[in-house]
Image 1: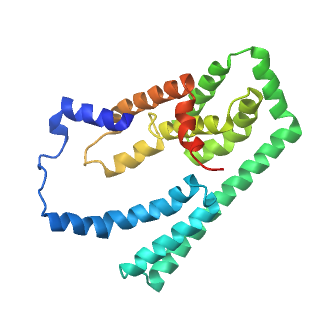
Image 2: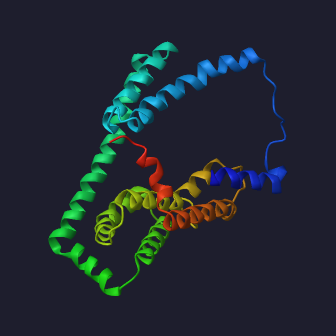
Image 3: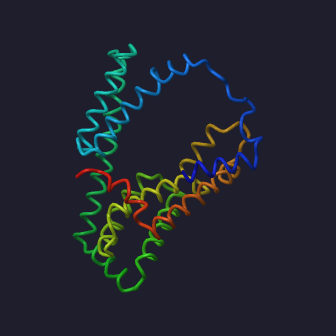
Length: 250
């Protein structure tokens, strides 16, 4: 919602930044057709993945299987369920799953090394000795994540920081779900932190010819500001971050 408000304000301040084409008035029959052929199938798939978790009907793993079933049904209904499409999906799944498992394995190994070497307990004692307030601990970790995002991708940042930050968060008595959401926000923002945020490079690749990295980074600064505002809100009022997870039926 914060990003939507920001985009609306930016358009109001600079109307020339949006396409000049006005709204197109489609016939009612065309709108109904689009709803049933595009919006409704996607909504059903989203419900099968997210809705079943929120209702407590399925676990995240089970809802993923339901999501696959929904995609297969929709693909079959649209006539796109071919052996070639299935093979392509399987190849993509194997690649992504392998990458995730390698990241998890490396992160687990790193966390075990930290634990066996005593580094984790040492860092917890060091943080406690500094006598920083819990809010300052969160702010420092948030700033570290943003700084790392200037030069590293999100997967590498998670692999390096989660084994260190989560024991500290647990020792500080933080709600780990709340802290995880804070970390996700920081990782999202780190992708647009100048000079070499990963998402900045992606946007530069699709930007009009002649666009510079400085222009892309400048355009991303308002969104960084919104992220910082959201961070402040979640620190002051943690229930903002925990409201949606609290709706899940356990």
